[in-house]
Image (cartoon, rainbow, N blue to C red; front, side):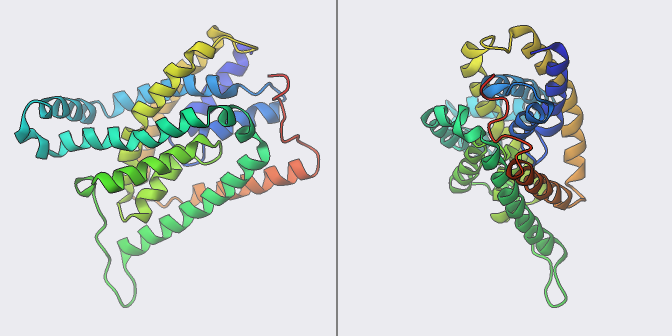
Length: 290
């Protein structure tokens, strides 16, 4: 991998990680369209550490408060009813599904799941799911001609059951094209949470999963055509761009709909099917050389 490739892929990772459009799919597609080798699951997981560092800094006050309360709750029973302490446990519980499924389906994640036809399918299907979830949220917020608006849930109402459902939604993102934030935010909206609550828990839930995945893949870094230097460079780029994107996205979702992302996903998925169907793009483009 050249330094230019690592710069572009780091930029793509930072731009797409927090948007509900799938960063892993865009890394895969960028390489395929450019005629580069597939960067691979290890490169993707490690560069995600960069964007997750942006989450740690952006939500640093929340994270410090949650971690502090969680540790105190281990020895102080009175702290176990504290919302921040409970959030610590809920992040742990919600991280179990992706941990178990990630190890179980490791070979599929690094192989068959990277087929461009599967990515096209997940882009479209999850785009439709996000669109439905977004419309339901909008309907609750504004109400209708013959009904008042419905108050949606905040993170203070999050329990173990919903935490696990969020976790299984996040685990779906093991398939490129699904999108970690897209799946968890869709799940949250369908369960009746506000856009801000769903997005905030989605980002907090991703921290242990992404960091664990990145550390787990470190042993495979530097192998094949992707060396350590470009990987680290891409990770740094992803961090800087990712921080700017997450700051923008958290403001965007307070007043705007997810429909632009829904439309983009569906159009990209259809375009991908057309290109593969016409023979202009191989469903395994770049894999053999990677």
